[in-house]
Amino acid sequence: MKTVLITGCSSGYGLETARYFHSKGWNVIATMRSPREDLLPRSDRMRVIPLDVTRPDSISAALAASGPIDVLVNNAGVGLFGPFEATPMATVRDIFETNTFGVMAMTQAVIPQLRQRRSGVVVNVTSSATLAPMPLVAVYTASKTAIEGFTGSLAYELEAFGVRIKLVEPGYGPSTRFSQNSGAQLVREASQSYAAFTQSVLAAYMQPAAVTTETDVAEAVWRAANDTTRQLRFPAGADALALAGAQ
Image (tube, rainbow, N blue to C red):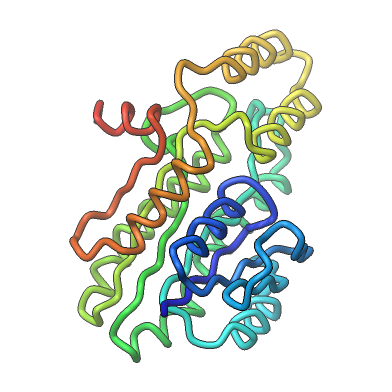
């Protein structure tokens, strides 16, 4: 029986992915900053442990408590909608700490056990924003695009050891708490000069032509984790698939 460790399981894509892998008979280690076992099925195959991917000590403790894993899903992330001009550099660094450096730190911490066993998979969840530019997400897109390049390069390094690394690129999912929180942050942080533009873009985001569901992402992560080919990218959701096809 295989074991998957998933970061960012308190809501949205991470929560649904934990439920999905559990339904497939896997052992699941669902991590979140403030653990809530009531969110997930009660089972001897489901464990909920604390993890803050921005803290090295938290990463070490979580991996020590987890034991050997077969798949790491780097899903934890934070959103930021708003004009770049009005975004403090301290906020930019905070976004990168979770979305970029947190992913790198988790991956680096897990590689040794996978390399020694010469098997295993790392799945990095990015965004369809990396496939096509959109307004008011410059910082968020930059943090996710960095992971796209990182993953593509690392795939070559790990292949020689039988370890695979994949990308899942979710489309826009307004039903997730991630998106709701980002939208609220956009309104608060926008400067007066960008206020009208910000409101018009936010209105468009709230009425997309196609949306990505939590299940779309969970299924894409599942496919990526079980894929044995060299396929790197797994778009998730109708909108992401459309953008990927236009590349």
